[in-house]
Amino acid sequence: MALLSDAVNCRLISDVPVGSYLSGGLDSTIIAGLAKKPHTWTVGFKNCNEFKWAKIASNEFASQHTEVLITEDEFISLLKKMIQKRREPFSVPNEILLYKMTKAVKKKNTVVLSGEGADELFLVMIEYSAGRTQASGISRNFHNSIHMAQTVTWK
Image (tube, rainbow, N blue to C red; front, side, top):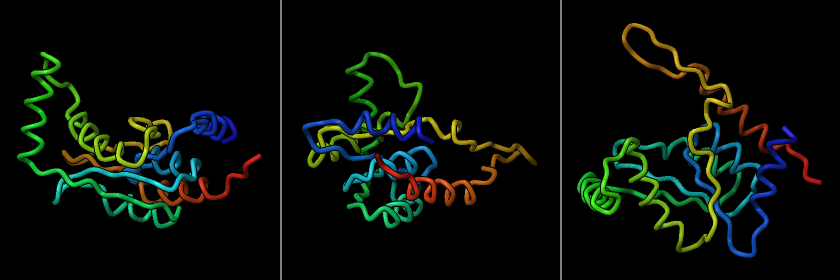
């Protein structure tokens, strides 16, 4: 835990406002909790998002949480613009969501912390059963990550 705490602390050294992405997943929840920064951010569609989990975590951390909403039409429009600018297709479609959220983040934070793609490091395992994918132990791990982030002692 000390290594993770030190890694987050190193990234907090800044002369500009720092915020945190917060999806409510284990990676961003741990990082946002350790950072103890006032602003957290989540992005999603109206009917497909992680707002519920991010809100639980942001309430625990007492952060000023912002939910950035993106419409399907806006997603397609940004996708087309970004493909034209990059001149190649996207392999990871969440880049469009991150782009949209980052534009909103810039209004309050110059630097933002992210745990993007690190859930696997915090032992979120995926089970394959009966042709469905479901997360194993998410609820337990989620609450453990909030507890872990709250109980870190700072030097």
